[in-house]
Amino acid sequence: MSSEQKKNSIGLKRDNQPQNDDFNIDLALRPTSWPEYVGQEKVKRNLRVIIDAAKQRGEASDHLLFYGQAGLGKTTLAYLVAKELGANIKITSGPALEKMGDLAAILSGLEPHEILFIDEIHRLNKLVEEVLYPALENRRLHLIIGKGPTARTLSLDLPPFTMVGATTKINLLSGPLRSRFGATFRLDYYETKDIEIILARSAKLLGVNIEPGAVKILAAASRFTPRTANRLLKRCRDYSQVKSNGNIDAAIAKDTLDFLEIDSMGLEGVDRRLLEVMIKKFNGGPVGVRAIAAALNEEPGTIEDIYEPFLMGLGFMSRTPAGRVALAAAYKHLGLETNNTLI
Image 1 (tube, rainbow, N blue to C red):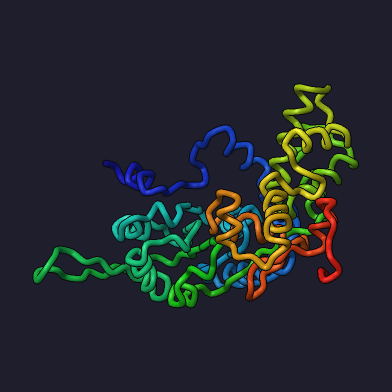
Image 2: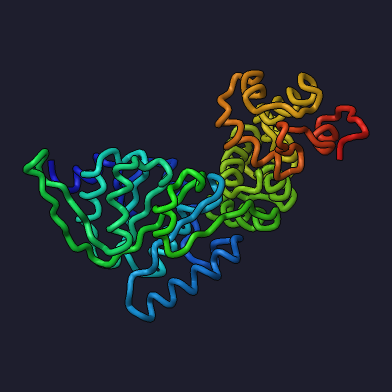
C-alpha cells in the first residue's frame, strides 16, 4: 500500500482532494476569507492576533482548540487559519484514528508549518491520545518497536506544525490533552442578523434569487446555525424549482418550511413532541432525561446533545437539579395553557 493510500485508509484528507457533489456545494458556500466569515467576532479577533504574531516571527502557530455545537463553523475556521498562515491543511477525525500507528503515520508525514485538523477530537482512543502529548508539547514522536523484553523506544523529531482540534463535547477531553492547546475558543450560536447575511451570500453563490422577506423567514427558522440556514436555503431552492419559477419569496419560504414540518422558530417535529411530552405527560416537569428519551424512543445522549441546547437557548426549557422543566414560552409557542407558577 502506498503512503497516500495509507493516509486515505485512516481518514486523512487534503484540502484539494476531490469530493462528492454535496461536499462540493457545501465547500462552495464556505467562507474563504475573514471578511466573508460572519459572526464569532471575539473568536476572530483573538485568532488574528495569534496568527499575525506567528507570521511575523516566522513560526508555526500555537495549537488551537475549537468547541461548540455542530454547524457553527469550526471546520471553516480551521481552513481560514491554514489559509492565513499560507499552509497546507490535512484533515482527519478522532474515530478514524483507531491505532497509535495511524496517528504516527500522519505525524511523521507532516511538512514544516502544515496544519493538522482533527475533527471530533473527543473521540480519540486514549492510547492514540498519548502519542499526541509529546508531539504537541515537544514536537517529538515516540515509537515503540517490537514487543515484550526486546521492545525499544525510538524518538523522532517532528517539524514545526499546528494542530487544530474541534469538538462538540469539550468535557470529554482529558485534562492533559486540553492543557496542550495554546488557545481554546468557544463558538456560540449566531445572531439572526448574521444568519441573514450568510443566507444572502449563499443565495448569491448558488445563483438563487431570494427576496428579503424570505431571508428573514429562513433566518428565523435556522436554529441560529449557519449549516442549518444553508440546508434550508437549498431545500427552498429545490421546492421553488419544482413548484414555482425558481425564485424564492416569502410564500415559497413558508411553504418549504411547512413541507419540512419546521415552524417559524425552527422547531422540528421531534422538538415539538419533546416539549409536548414534558407538558402533557409529565405536567411540565421536573422530569429526568431518561424518562423523556423513553417516551420519545430516543437515546438520552441525543436529547442532551441535539435538542436540549437549542430549546434551552430559546427559553423553552431549563435544567434543574430535580430534572428538566418546560417554561412558559414553550406553552405559549405550542398554544397550551400554562399555570401561574411558571416564569
